[in-house]
Length: 359
Image (tube, rainbow, N blue to C red; front, side, top):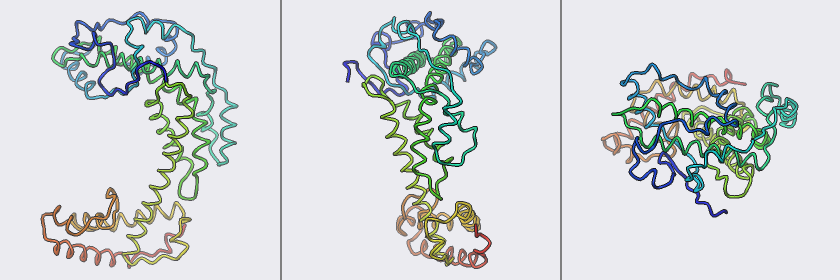
């Protein structure tokens, strides 16, 4: 680990003490810094231009609303002691990043290696070449520096005295940070493909696991400390793998809860249907039927059944006493409501022809 100070920052900016201590709009200038016009940022600025808002026509009321909205939005970044230098922006963007052009052959190869029958357009996600160590470090450093600059200006926003120039500057910093983040993400998408394909099974499609894996990768980019001396792929592999495992386990637990609830309603299943090989189509149909049946219960009955069988948002089975305390009734009354709800569900279940759901 280097001697630089690493700080995980959320909304509150990491910056030199003289700037943040007693900072005001007058001490933190809203003028556009000269390094924003450097050659290295010309392409990123051109590509994010259509994402930036034109605030020139906003009146004071509009600017106040925009300021309040920006203050509600968190800025999450990894601070670094080197960012404290007033000349750091110029030095960070002085070196040439030199990203290689996208290659369609890389995307096609990724699709073939996945071992899954996927639409060819998904290959476009994997056309970015891998990053060299110095490129990776530069992208992370630039992304976090841009977010730190945005956080400094956000810290002095004042809804009573809104600044159009400061809002535009913050938006520019954030958009540029997102551009650098996206370059890191797209260069590591082939890693996500290679990991999630190992978790594919009849109950977990490649598409779903891939979507979750990309979200996990993006979170990993935001939390990675570029100054610790190891490659991002090492960290990202653990993040994506843990996320895929958690997704598979959570879905399996959810299936068991729903199937258990259906069985308690006297809906009979064969041994094959109880197994994990139940088709995805049939699974969604069963869930849909259960949802419809629960929808025919009144509000209290529905709440009790979901809580007693750990369905929906309920992550554990609730006791009768816990539900009685929650509803403000006696334990015996909860028991009566549960019995009444189960009788209704059994009556409805009697009309369900499982043969119709065969997938």
